[in-house]
Image (cartoon, rainbow, N blue to C red):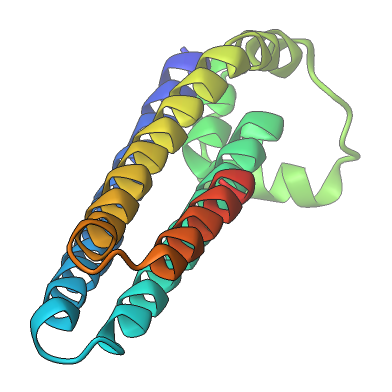
Length: 180
């Protein structure tokens, strides 16, 4: 039962991270492509600003990934730290008064209970599934970054034959692949 709750919490974390990533990557990609298009017609130096906006979006996406992974690891490593999990264990032990539970936690030594140990085992066994979902989230981010970098770079390469812009975007793309 605890493993179901942890799976639900991790799913919530993934959904929040996905929504944030969509917001960050969509806005940075849109602004980057718009600036790249304006650079073709108005001012060629805007292509550097497009790359800077895109790199900023990649850095924000990387930060979102790190925070999500940190929260996910904390949740899998120590599931009984959740208040709902404490209440769940208290019900299993027939001790469901919150005041009594908090008093016991403060006064008694912390020895791992067999009930908690058994429940944590299922959570740690499911950790591989959680990691696979996180890897899928990272893959989606990589796809968006690759598509955006191509859409920023391609007009300058085809229309202006600007090889320097293409090399810069390929470098940014390779660095983003290494970071994410």
